[in-house]
Amino acid sequence: MESITKNRQSPETLRAMVERAYGADRAPVGDGWFGELGHGWFNVAYRIRLRDGAEVVLKIAPPPSVEVMTYERGAMSIELRTLDLLRTRTSVPVPAVDFADRSRELCDADYFFMPYVDADNLGVVGDGLPAAERDACMEQLGAVNREINSVRGEGFGPLAGPPAASWREAFTGMVEDVLRDGERRGVDIGRSYDEVRSVLAAHADSLDEVSEPRLVEWDLWAGNVMVRDGRIVSVIDHERAFYGDPLIESGFTGTQMSAFGDPTPFMRGYGHGPLTATEQVRRRLYCVHLLLVMVIETVYRGHTTSEQYDWARARLDEAMALFEPVRP
Image (cartoon, rainbow, N blue to C red; front, side, top):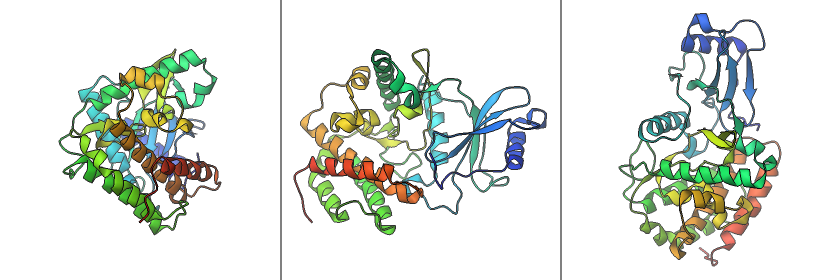
């Protein structure tokens, strides 16, 4: 996926970064030792073969000259913090961090190295799998996601803080950040921004049912899951994690919107029954938030085609239609 947030570097800079991380004796020589992994939507990622044959992945944060959405600021620090939480407090399979550099001495952004995961991306191969095998993977993902959500935080909101006093305060603040991002760049969301604010205000009391902050990935869809021989071997891309309501996780989106697929295998693996009436309202608010992000980020990332924008605009209309009209 092409995006202006991808901070590509020259072979010379990449080699210097490898040498700093692994030492001169493992730095690659010659040609053909690196290639870009093209499935990411935000950071650039390279698959690199070291001199001794070991393969690693290098992720580089966006250049500071590119404006990102408010919630994406410091995303690489969030990912490193989340990886540490998952490694130390769960059994969820995640990549190790071989080396991280925030000095900005070799390039203009943070970066880190991790081992290459030799497996298939579920988002890429999923449609070609037999239905029973894909469902089994999604069921496993539900169980994995539940374990991630078992990590408790001290407050709602960003991992680095400061914590919000309630989930209502945290989530409404998250939505407001997205709306202001869209207004700042004049993004057409198909309706007035204040209409979205009115819907959120009218149903915000549903958020008060959430009393315990849990670690949520938010972006844990099939494209961030690596599988081998029918088993999940790694979960990747953790830069959007925060403490909040587990119901905001990607796997629950289909409970309210069929465009996001059948959630049944995921929910079975998670161990979650049918949503209550209040949970449905919350999940619908989370759908609106997700689709606002998907619409507005196309401008921030400089998409050259309207495919994502058009799809997300139509789904945002569907999500808003789940609520009774509330006009400002």
